[in-house]
Length: 281
Image (cartoon, rainbow, N blue to C red; front, side, top):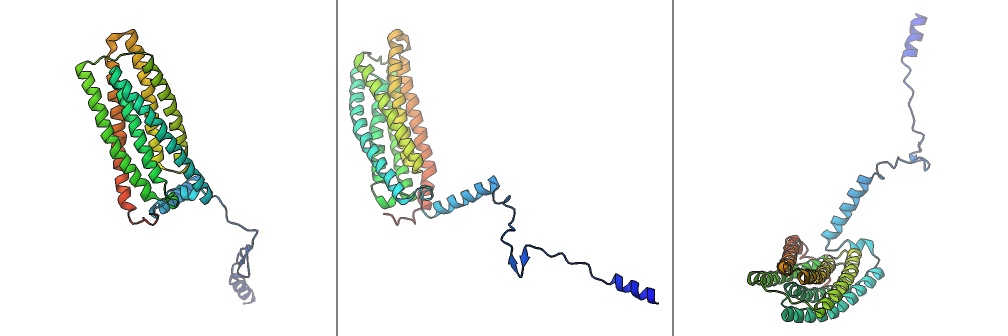
């Protein structure tokens, strides 16, 4: 009997309770921290940043509102305005010179460049409007409206460039090559490339699609400026390749047309999504 009772007592002793030493009196031990593996995972960080970006855009703001302090944003806004005004002045002169070359030397690529330079003037004016309001530096709605206008201008300009280039190819119009054509093409190419680099760099900082688009247009102008030189050199050594000048005009027109269509496809829905956030106007 005694042994049986002692055995029962031993069997009824509860299992020892394992107490977490990290909690004492309901408080967490400050030295005991959870493993940061989940929070520091690259995928977790990427998902978190995407959610933040989506929430910011959903409030009618650009991503630059998270990256730049107010005084930094205003400083870059002023730089964008300054570059745009310089671009308007420079490309307006280049457009006049290129139009003169295209009519005097019957160059389709020069006409294409002249129209692209005129387009650059318009796109820079749109960028000036975009950043003319200091309080709208991060406004997504204003940004998307500027891009839609740029898309329409791109499409209209591309149709004019394509029409002139196709006409010259159909009529077998031969370009006339001289030093004036060479000088205009070299100066145009260098100036447009410099403007393009500055605009794209500022556009990336301000997360501005309009400013990047303006830079892309300047880059196209630079390529066209050098293409005038290349086509003229080739034609001078081999007149049989007369069609190169017009073909370059067609190619540039198609590139501008495709970019303009892409702008409209991307930006028109965003304008509609952010139309309720016009508090900056």
